[in-house]
Image (cartoon, rainbow, N blue to C red):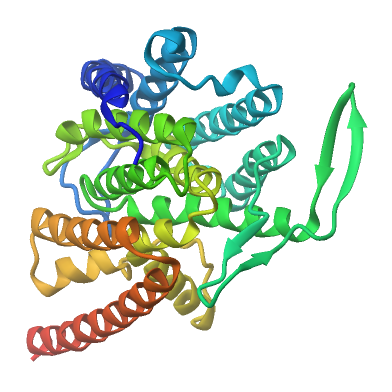
Length: 370
């Protein structure tokens, strides 16, 4: 494993920036009425500031830029000297900026889900056209599954671009899916932030492994972890500020990309974010079967079911944090085959949990009616 000590400073700096910026962002949100007001399906009881995602995004970008210029003093690698890598990072930044701006507009005016989906696709395309894509995944039974056998190249403004249809489609679905998974997850104080923190830390340690050797990815992952950790004290129940769509979209987006550039470690990201991914699939499928919009908000998510079962907000959040932490640790230490088995166990745990919560939830409702 690579030496983690050089990464301590960017982590602490991102943490401090976020810790200092978040109260300032909260004041701005309240002044300009970026406020989430209580509603029937919502958990919070009083108006709460949004825009917390801005502090995470700004902290992440500031520290990344600072260490970009200071890298000769802290790192032995210099990925930005490579033009292709610089182009990839620029694509990531551009896509992130699009999502944060659209998220802020949605936090203020509530955009249509389809409009948000269009911008999510646009953000993903910024990444793909810049050259970041899932060209292969590890086969748990040996070798790789290759998505990059068919490709087309073209030049635009003296820059060479490539289109790899299958790989690009897989990457597009993965990024847009992860954006919405974290967005769905942002239903309880601190839940999305905590799970995203465990996701970033897991990707950080995996990127340090000599078999992966992705120091630049580790650098971005640890900065993200620090920025999120600095936000959590203000977001944990009772929350003083919410991250809003600007934060949930950014976190889902950047975690999806880090999983790709850390050597297509999609299995690890699935383990850390497995319960919200499976929960999102369950909820969307359920809505479609019932003939309602898959984007229509309701209280059918796992975290809502835990509350209905009798968990407090803090208990539900910590319980789901622990699931992410446990499976994140498994993702770090497991082989590809081990991750497949762990993924199957996670699916089984989720099925049993949903069945149990649904059954006892119905029993509880019947007693109330009786």
